[in-house]
Length: 289
Ligand SMILES: NC(=O)c1ccc[n+]([C@@H]2O[C@H](COP(=O)([O-])OP(=O)(O)OC[C@H]3O[C@@H](n4cnc5c(N)ncnc54)[C@H](O)[C@@H]3O)[C@@H](O)[C@H]2O)c1
Image (cartoon, rainbow, N blue to C red; front, side):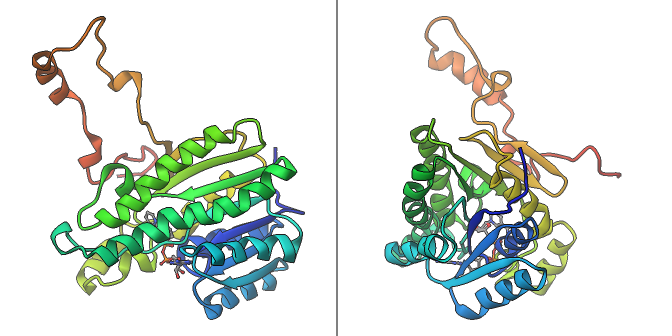
């Protein structure tokens, strides 16, 4: 099983910057022909040039994943331009922060449209090609916000949380087809999404704690490769730490032989550990204090 992409074609959405850009470069270095999809020609062209400069093949497509027809153009750029589509990385996204009492219907819809509908649109167009060839990899970029919440991010979280359920559900639909679907959620990463609209003081403070897009790109590249032989899994990626995101685990489950009473649960449930509210879910034991 290999992380070599020679002869393979991979679409990366939101590939013009940040995590998507780093992933597109990583795939290009490993022999993939890369479709660089983003909102405007200039950002796509810069990444295409960077891939070509290191000997790789790439094509740019300026299109919004939020739009059904534009998403078809993204997938067609792979299928018509390079003859096939082996992997799709649904990475495009943005975050517009506001508390729920200020969140407008337009902002709510726009964020859900990019993250959830965008993932559906590209996946739906790509999956029939993948099923016909009996092979495919779909990688969805989700977020801790969508799993455990984040302040001022409810629209973003709704889009990402929906994408988490979407990932796990289509993985079930696709069992036996050769198409694997997985997702990962990056911890705070040094990109425009994190630093936009922040005060200089916040940016300076965050710069020392965020991971680099390349930390995340390695995971995206592996999940998009032939070497990834599982489906329906989600991972948390924080610099040098990668871990499966647990939904139900026996060690954090209370069991009874019969039926719980609310009174018993009032004793037991407050004792569950809720790591979601910690600043960081995990402490990397390889870090030197
Ligand atoms: N940076 C983080 O800390 C972090 C954490 C968790 C999840 N994520 C997710 O990672 C992904 C990449 O974000 P990033 O941090 O690299 O941000 P980024 O802003 O650097 O890059 C995102 C790219 O997506 C593009 N994009 C936005 N809307 C699009 C659309 N409708 N169609 C096509 N392209 C579109 C943007 O133009 C941009 O180039 C996003 O899905 C984001 O939600 C990021």
